[in-house]
Length: 99
Image (cartoon, rainbow, N blue to C red; front, side):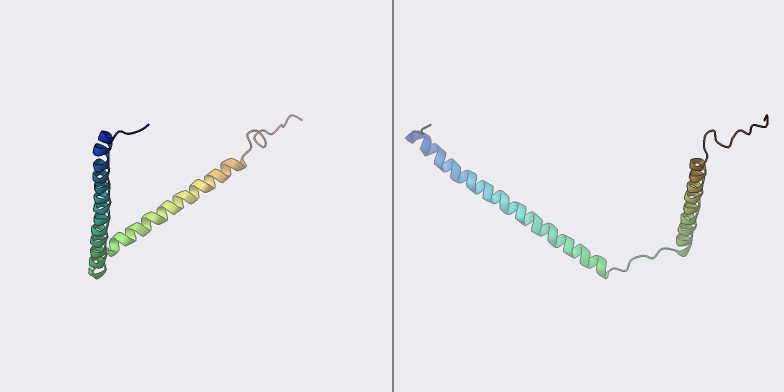
């Protein structure tokens, strides 16, 4: 496929324009990332200097109680599951006295 002189007169300037647009787009992306990075650094610094709120002790004890209850329930379920697994469907369920 060969290009004629007239086609080259149109194609070459457009390639330069396309190259410039691609470069500008790349620079915009880099600038956006740099701005986001700076904003993140400022936010991290602010959080490091800021005093964080402390939880009330009743919330902590309620959480511990709830956690203990959940652990007890899971232990009971595990124990029940072990008992169910240990039972055989017909062995030990019927005693033959006829004999």
